[in-house]
Length: 460
Image (cartoon, rainbow, N blue to C red):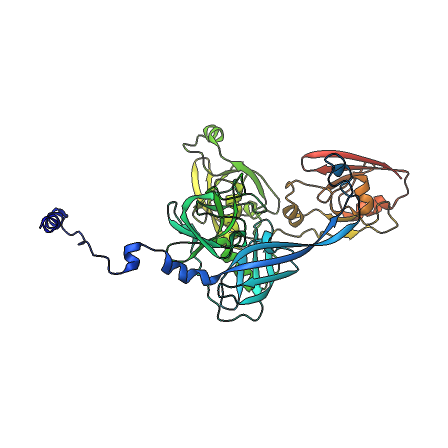
């Protein structure tokens, strides 16, 4: 009698138009279980076993804390098989799988195991170490289960998510959590650099390349790294957003063998509180441009030093990794709508998304025995070379692709820029080849390494 009276009071107290409470109709509704969602999603998440052969030097000093660094290159290099364990997500019925580059990159043998124990051999058809993504193609696969991609720009902090993978090789495992943060660009470790979704769903070694899905079973990100002091999950994990995965898939299906992202040809810095105050801005936002390359598409669109880029295609950008991500998602060949702030006036400008021009030709050369540094591989400087090596926009000289045995003895490293040889400036590979072909008793190289200028001297 008491319970009946209580129910009547509750119904009378409900506001007009409110939905009448409904009694749960099934065991699943009573338990609020993730089981139906997991059953749909897990068949499309796979375990990946990769092998690669690496050269390892066995030194008699390797256990000595002092001499092992002095004799790091001592001893004969021996091949050693290195195994890696990770996860992946099936994105097409014919066996297109996404995983992390650090799981499958440079692997010589890749084996993919589905949740129903079917096994396939696979090969990497597109990968990028910086983005830490790779697309695999399973051999002779058909009618496979897939996970649909969600527009990751619609993901919000606080959404329920599940992380699916193969942690520590124990078998397929599911962990739950929420989206803890968005636009994370400075916390992830490993190869990946850029823009991440943060989650507190448990991610451990072996989860790399696995799925981060929403409550509707759609892929919102690929799990890639964690922040940890112990090696286990501390509730701070990172996933690469699905929108970047979609661009990788698009390029892979178009037949690309190397991931290409648009080139901005600009340098700048995030607008902080001090810069905002100096520019009279109410809120610090965006990236202020400090320099533009002569071939930059932003220069072509009318941008100038001092302009502030606040958004790309309507999405805010407050750091260089965010801007790189937004341009990569826009894709080559498109016109991105870039929001510019100049003298307090905001304007949206269309900017062509182009690859870094390989002009002038890099004219890569390997110096022969007639030079003082045979085996040295060099290239001309151009926007494509600058982008590949992350060099300053104003870099001039000749790039060292490979120092070769003699160049290494002098002290050269890949990525060095040779500015002058024996006091004479070099502007091209032809200049360098000519200078190093001359007879000389001593060699002096003016080299730029990062922000340092180094003079290397050697007697010949």
